[in-house]
Length: 110
Image: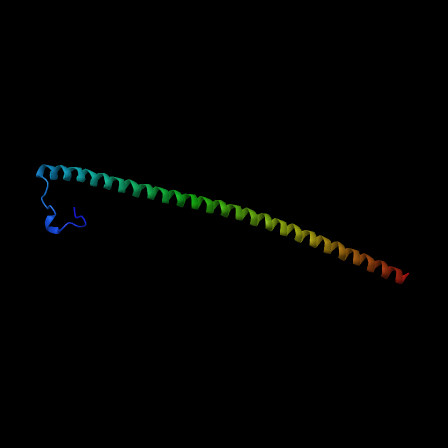
């Protein structure tokens, strides 16, 4: 290895014996296979997590949609009930005014 203060001519470039290189290739080959396998597992895990997140999101959205439909229906019912109350109130008021007018007309005729 290169060290500070060492002249390049002093660095030893001799290779290790062939059997050591072959053993290293086998070890690194195994390591590469393992790394590839781990990458595949990581990819599958990420894909599964993304699928799960997507499913949770869709479930949440449909639940929210259902709740909104319920809320809208409830509001609609409340609005219709208020409208009926107003209509009844107006009808009572008109009836009362008609009764009062009838009394006045009857009183004038008398």
